[in-house]
Image (tube, rainbow, N blue to C red):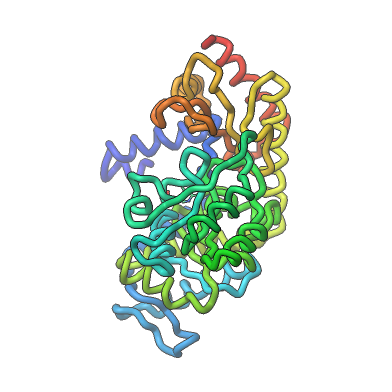
Length: 395
Ligand code: PLP
């Protein structure tokens, strides 16, 4: 910070304060994590200066297909990054490591296989889907005809509803993946329905990618035509996105990323993604993924013991939703109150939501960041009891 402060005291001070907040708070935001210093250093490296619009393709065509000179090393780096990610997910799918974020990965993935006005069948935001899965205020809801499958009365994805709606609406794409869904997703069942309906099948595994990499959630590879992800959630890498696709879709995906959606790739972030992939290939990473899930189960179990309702009644992954539908305060009220005592989480809609998305009747709780900081099951049980004490004060 001292180094930054010499150039900009304002920025240096703010980064220092945020660093301390992150270090001292109990971080329960399900989409966040702490990456390694190696990832951070790669992202802050000299690669951030390098322009490299285009793709390396050195191995396939024998030639770089960049629009700039001086790309020898970033060509090698980007191809290495692609190789590492294929290794992480044990797949021979094509991979594009250039998307700047999960949203841009989804934007490009849709563009690669759809025309504006085509129909996408997905999980709505209210039921745990992401903004880019068809929200009316997002490009997805504006460019495509969105239809949604539901969760059942217990909050589980209703596969019968998926089948029924696939037959009724004949979508060009069936999409699954979520920002707030705590159960295993049955990719094989989705793939079968997509096949019957003649639709592409896409998985946005942004939230669970680290669990898939660590063997703690079934893999979508082999089932989906396209898989997108972020690299900064359970995966514990730099902020960014990845797209994997069946080889026959490779060219369409690449041109949808560049030149359609983006300009120059962030080679410094691609370096961070490559370091993250190597970390995900180490045996400790498997242990991390298993611990994230074990911690989450213990955390949810403690809330159940304390008499709370959890959407679906538990969790299989890194996240769960505390249901506050019957409480006199909103998810936002609880989020704000917990902020005051150094516990960070976020408000979230729950199935059957009655409050506005700005208020909500639930909070989303995740275990990936604190597991990185070494928390075990009993630590999370203790945090559940702390949150319970705060809630009791609010009643
Ligand atoms: N997809 C899912 C399932 C997400 O949860 C998120 C982010 O929370 C995204 C995509 C978008 O990622 P980004 O914020 O990097 O655009």
